[in-house]
Length: 148
Image (cartoon, rainbow, N blue to C red; front, top):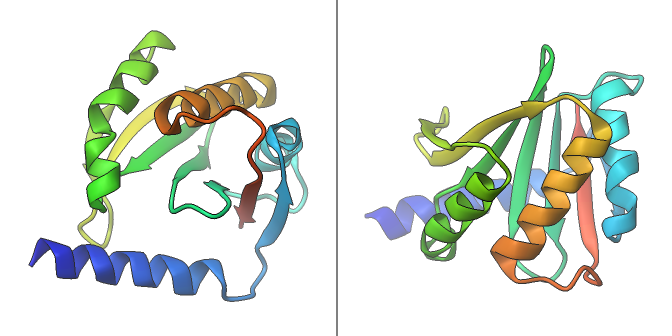
């Protein structure tokens, strides 16, 4: 049953990720993260969310801009995501934050924490979590999706 739910959530994510709309999709490397966080926090038109995905994998982290802070979301839907939970929580802790488990509107679980709405700080947090959680070198290509 859980496998079926996870498959449905992942399918919905894929449909959403490849459906054109008012989203802004950029591909690049870690050096491009600062531009995307600057747009998320200070950009016009206002954007409310950023998904940073490692190209050619199913690995991603979500960021949502709320008044004065960024909520960082790590989904716990797939077996891979669940297997990375302890590692992710340790890395978040090393950055000085504590995660909380929340439920999405579709019932999916996420590890969340709030960070300052500062583009430089968010670039550092994102790069660190991507590299350490997914064991990346920093040379990987990223897909960055901004949404209103």
